[in-house]
Length: 164
Image (cartoon, rainbow, N blue to C red):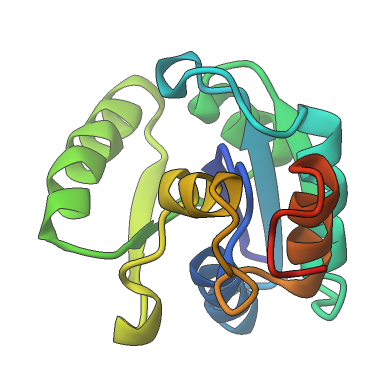
C-alpha cells in the first residue's frame, strides 16, 4: 500500500488543494492531508482544529483520504505515518523554485522523496492568502473554495462573504 503525505497550512483549503488531493487519491492507496501552523505566514484566520474540520468536510467524498494536524517537521510526520512520498501541488514556476528546495532538503534529512502534482490552469491562480483577503473585503470566493469553507468564511467574517 502506497501512502503519501500532503502537508500545508490550508488556511483555508481551496479548490486547488482539493484538486491535488483528488488526483493523489486516484494515484495512491492512502492520502494523509496534514494541516500545520506555519509561523512564517502570520496569524491564521482559522485555528488548526477549524482547518481540520473544514478539510474533512471538503474531502468527505474521498474514501482513502484522512486528515491530521501537526507541529513537527514534515519529514517526522512522514516517517510517523509511514509515507512513501510527500505530495506538493504546483501552480506556477515560482512554486517549483521554492518547493524544489524544500523537497531537496527533506530528501537530504530523511530520504523521503517529494512528488509534484501540477494544478489545472483553472485553479492555478488560487492562493489561500488571496482568498482570505478577498473574503475579508466582502468579495465572492464561493467559486474558489468548497461549500463548507464558503459557509465558514461567511460566519467568521460576519457574513461579508458571498457564501451567505
